[in-house]
Length: 353
Image (cartoon, rainbow, N blue to C red):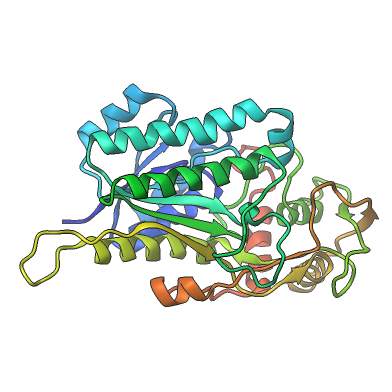
């Protein structure tokens, strides 16, 4: 029997790509999303790409009764938990909204999971939890700190998961700390579709390329980096999706009863794992790669540094390779090519032009 997975936030950017990877790996999927920052069209396109209709339930992770109804009608192996608000600037303006949705919502989800004895969770965390890193590359033992409510909400959930694992050793809780997801599915059918002006670099570049925005603002050119612009660990969203499959496969393997006849399950507890390439790319390096791969010329201007931005941030991905057998495979050029394929085919994202 196939393992069935509940994917909260499954119509979002990373969630939709992960649904394809899960299907290809032989998992059954149920998508749960309130569509507050995503489109129903994403799950329609995923269904088309995999040749199978995905069960979609519109609901909020803070809605106990709807969650109970979902868990009572399905027998889940585990949950991949993407559902959450993610704009740093908005979190500063609306901190209560972020703590309510991201932290309280996760508590509600965990409570319902416990009611139905579903104890396997892969949580969508973030490299934001590392704040301004003391050392590079960043490993999982690096100190956690953050100066904005979005990052604080991720840290808070991680602490909750840690405490939960200590209190009850039947929980298996993997926190995947993403670095900078970019790119799109190679089909061009699904990709990143931000509301309004993008918060992230790659969709901003691609919207300039397609003519939606006039030019790219590069925040700061005086950092102590190769060319003065910020350096980040960009990871293709397809690689990231495979990281979630690898985490689920790991939980499945670790929690099976051993062949010795014992029925006792092994406990994973709380396990934080970085998902990144282990390499840093500067803003200008990414712009130049995009120009070269697509033949477009991206106009840009330097502006003041943004408050809270750091000079460099890239991962040590050794733990993911050792424990999960996972490593990033796709290059910066692949990220640019697939982003442009998506953006040029869908200049208005999932909206009908």
